[in-house]
Amino acid sequence: MLPSTLQESSAMEKALLAKFKENVLSIPKSYIKLGKDDPRRITHSLKVALAITLVSFIYYEQHLYDRFGVNGIWAVITVVVVFDFTAGATLSRGLNRGLATFLGGALGFGAVSLARRIGHICDTQPAECFHGQNKIAEGIVIGISVFVIAAGATFTRFFPTIKARYDYGVMIFILTFSLVTDYGFRVDSVENDFQVAWERLSTVLIGGAACIIISICIFPVWAGEDLHNSVASNLEKLSNYLEAFGSVCFESSKHGGTVVIKKDESFLQGYKSVLSSKGKEEMLANLARWEPGHGRFRLFYPWKQYLKIGDLARECASSIEAMNPYVDSDFQQSPGFQSKIQESCKKMSAESSKALRELATAIKTMTEPSSASPYLENSKSAMKHLTTALKDFSFESTDLLAILQAATVASILVEIIKCMEKISKAVHELSELARFKNAEPTVSCKKLHQLFINPSFEGDGKLNMGNKTIHIINLLPRQENNKSITN
Image (cartoon, rainbow, N blue to C red; front, side):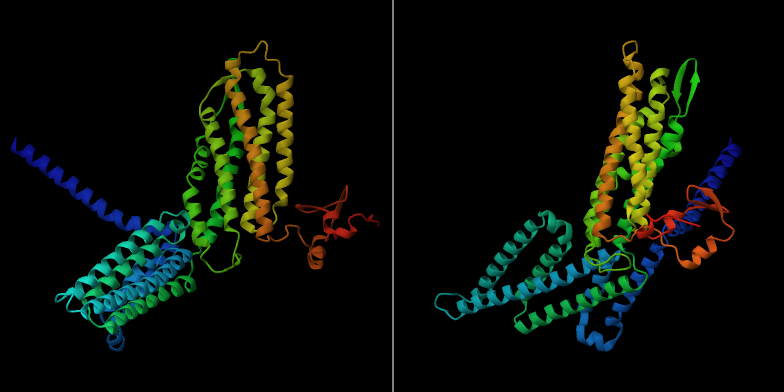
């Protein structure tokens, strides 16, 4: 028994040692994976470290320490709580903190001055007041001031606009006002009160300025750009689903006289992230409003329009979610009904996919989304053909339960196309508001010279040049489109 027990104990120790080694080795691997997933996280960490190091010189440099003293710690605290991943978030927190500190300090200094004035009035009437009653009067005034200001400021946080954009500032305002008034009650000199408020405001401004300058000037991460890419990516995910739906789900094979709709797990999950993107997009849009004009995004850019497109994308994703249970399972259908709607549904799905992809590309490249219009018209045409096919189909001798699922899928596809029309309209509105560039190609004389080397005519105004087929009419200026081409 003893050797067996020793062997079991040895095996357990080896297992624990192996598990410990595995856990230790997984730590650097998780760090490496986190950095590879988004390299901006590495630069953000370095920027925060740089900002903290810089403001810490208030303590390291003797002249600065003599000027600000222990209040220099507020610069470090400001960097820690203000510096965020995106420039918009850093600007929002920095400006909120600076303004809230100024207002809270100024109002707190005013409350302390008022309390002291009332206490002084009481102190000048010794017949009516006993010794120390001036401090009691000051305490009552300051207590009432703190209660009223804290209650009123906290209540304002329930307003949606304040909650979305200034919530952090209101909290800092309450904190600063309370600190200044409480400290001022125990300090007899008004100059000391003012000195404390000024030193804290100065160090907060130093910390906030360091955060904002480093965040904007050193490898900035723009919330607006993230929102821009997120909305375009969501449209691409919907496009991928519909593309796979048309090419896979309606590829049917006959088994014993029935039609079985195939499924493909690879595309059935991509759209689900669109459904949960509302909170992220609203946060990015709120932060993007704080950012200055940068790159392709000018000042006062129409960020709200992205939220409208995002809402419509989620509406489309909801329709896909309703359709997915019918797709993600094998079910038998009436062969006659299936064959009637199959081609129309495949075309509706395929053309809708192409339209959404063009709209996503238009947003990404910030060009006019005119290239999506033909695909949208094709999907609407297929929808009309589906309606005609359903009217012509005889339901008298058909089991309604056998056609229910396919009919539901077709109906949802129609709703998706209607939703896609709204998305197309919203993207066109964004194109106008954001002044997207013209999508029409322009061909230089040098490019024309290169293209017209050894051309061969195919007829109908086309030139075949190796791997490219060019419509001559598209190379001409608009005013010459109606002129005839002669040899």
